[in-house]
Length: 404
Image 1 (cartoon, one colour):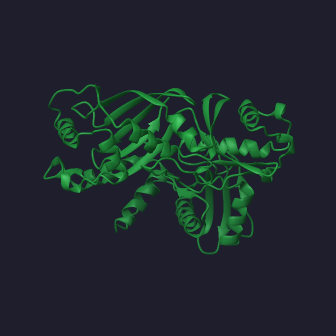
Image 2 (spheres, rainbow, N blue to C red):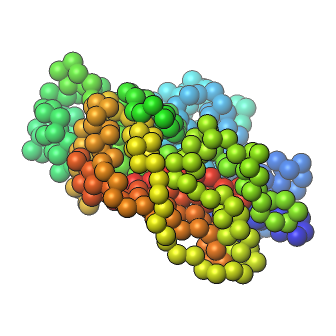
Image 3 (cartoon, rainbow, N blue to C red):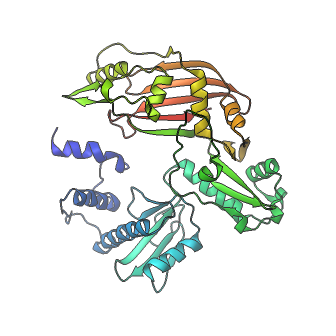
């Protein structure tokens, strides 16, 4: 594999087409920045686009890096170097304060979606001139995925409509406030807050669930002196646990190998491998079959797991101390109170069936499906996926999601 093959295998996921479109200004700038990070100072001067646009994009990237470094508001970079991921749901007014504090511009021009130089069809662009970076144009994006956008929109609507009578609210807010016994007419926008900054990975605890409501809350609502912590999930699914890379399955001399000496049964991933009786040797064999397109195809097969240990671990990832709000259709939500440790265990319910499918020539993923019957969620299904999240074969990571 030559240098270019390695480069695009590593970075293809950063480009919307899987490769840099040399007619796309954003792709060209991203490619130049990646090369600079590798110590290669290269410019595609033969590409025909305005030098001023390129310079503004470079200025903007530097300004975004400066904002992330000097604030703690949950901002993140995105594949488009002009976009600033706003996972912390910072309001427009608060973002202008941040710009004025960090850059002290004479003026801030805001362009709505698809107006002026703003190419975004959804988010505002903030244009200002700085002494250190020059002209900057930042698109304050709602985050990196549909789930984050759903959270941001839910929060913004709740904040904007604070003070209106409950019957004037969208169906989702009416459902939520009915479950909480909240009178929206008594609320102000200051009663609707979000303190979450960036990713809030939930850890697994073999001892069971703990009170994590304040930590994982996407939406805080204060009513009559009481604060309600809300965890919001869109209808596409609910991520429960995302573990680190798995170190005991790796590449050696061109083959995928399993090294028992690197297996740690006390780590989060190690605990789950033991609980599910996952055969690491089968994973390595299956991945080699996938790479070489050899061997038999695998099917889902029953597997015996430690039901009690799994319930406690999964309940610990849910935690308690908040209301779990899930979107079920356009405008429809279900509100589930997870206020005690018992609520979390009841939410997991009784395990009725567990199936596993190992990698083979047609798949590079380990998939485990766990069917449960929950007092709070009803018939439910969880999925454990062990795979590389960037399209490659290795390294592997383990994720648990509630898929229905």
